[in-house]
Amino acid sequence: MQRFKNKTALVTGGTNGMGLATAEKFIEEGGTVIITGRTDETVKSALAKLGENAFGIVSNAGNMKDLMNVQQEVRKYTDHIDVIFANAGYGKFAPVEYVDENQFDELFNVLVKGPFFTVQQILPLMKRGGSVIFNTSVATDIAMPNFSVYSAAKSATQSFIKTFAVELTERGIRVNGVSPGHIKTNIFNNTGLTAGQIEGAVRDIIPTIPFKRQGEPAEIANVVLFLASEEASYIHGAEIKVDAGISVIR
Ligand SMILES: NC(=O)c1ccc[n+]([C@@H]2O[C@H](COP(=O)([O-])OP(=O)(O)OC[C@H]3O[C@@H](n4cnc5c(N)ncnc54)[C@H](OP(=O)(O)O)[C@@H]3O)[C@@H](O)[C@H]2O)c1
Image (cartoon, rainbow, N blue to C red; front, side, top):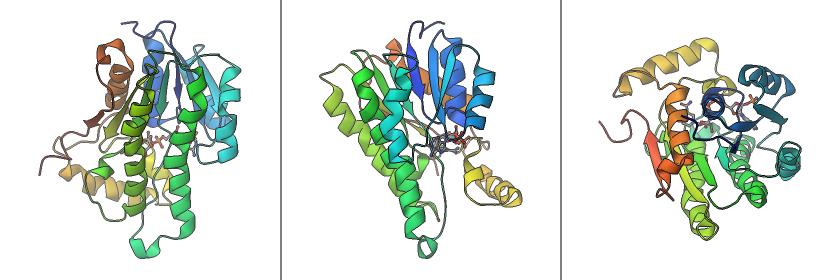
């Protein structure tokens, strides 16, 4: 299928995990992609994998100066964006008593301010038929220990699906969300956990997943492409859970 021929997508956090898998699929289907990531090294390495239909911007979704520059940076490559996948992010997890203001602000900066101001800044480049997709999380459905701030931040992002949808309806821009369950990415690498602790956490999570396996980034990317495509032309203000049923099966 070539559903995205002549279309350009902005994928924030496109250097790894779900963002990279989504960028790969957009390109496979004829699209051009602009990815963001925090370092020159990660962006360059992703661009080497993605090939000539990808462009990259070093931009920190948790930094207001970078967010205010994102439109200018995107304009170096294109004057229009058809699809935004607001995906950049990571988690930091701690019991309530151990959360300090820095950690609280850090997560709200990257997970709430990041997607909000990215979409705000890119909107002038979007026309009728455009599509915005927010990446939320199963953490908005299930109360997990140590997830208080992450879950609160993702719940704020989840609210943008509806509030942006109501404002963008008149402009013909659809707004939706994808809510991943436990997906095999580098999500735990920014947490400060050691490799052994990450392995232990994943080992503990797997038995709780109805399919007894983590999801693949491509399984999220498939849904993002569907939501961005004409096949989803009547879907607006919706969040699709891609979580092997973990949010509804006990
Ligand atoms: N994995 C899961 O189980 C899971 C479940 C639900 C939701 N999520 C959400 O899914 C999204 C993608 O995460 P992932 O699991 O695919 O993790 P990942 O493999 O670590 O990828 C995260 C991506 O986001 C980028 N990124 C992180 N912080 C950034 C920042 N401040 N500014 C710009 N880019 C940033 C990273 O790029 P650089 O390293 O180059 O900056 C990387 O490209 C996140 O919003 C995460 O919260 C993950």
